[in-house]
Length: 89
Image 1 (cartoon, rainbow, N blue to C red):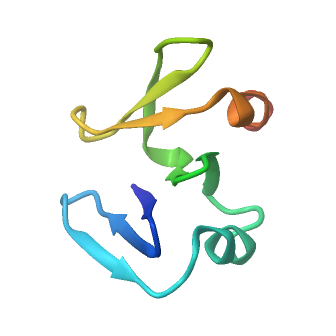
Image 2: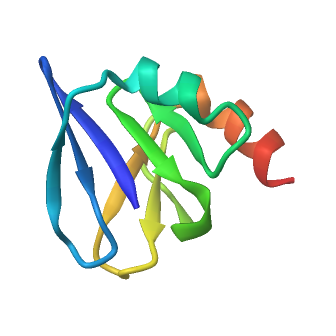
């Protein structure tokens, strides 16, 4: 569903809620999926657009994305919001 960077560590979170360590940076993952379902939505997150169910207003012009498991929420920063809107339009 999404990948998260935390310092030098990147983990993938699956639909079954498994957490898998990755040996690639988020930037490397973005490069590998230029037109695929994954896109950057925050400096620390890539999300699979097929699993975004809802966009929730958050604070200071940012948003949160509710994912298909209905419990995971991923931040959508103001910096990436415009790209997100173009992608889902």
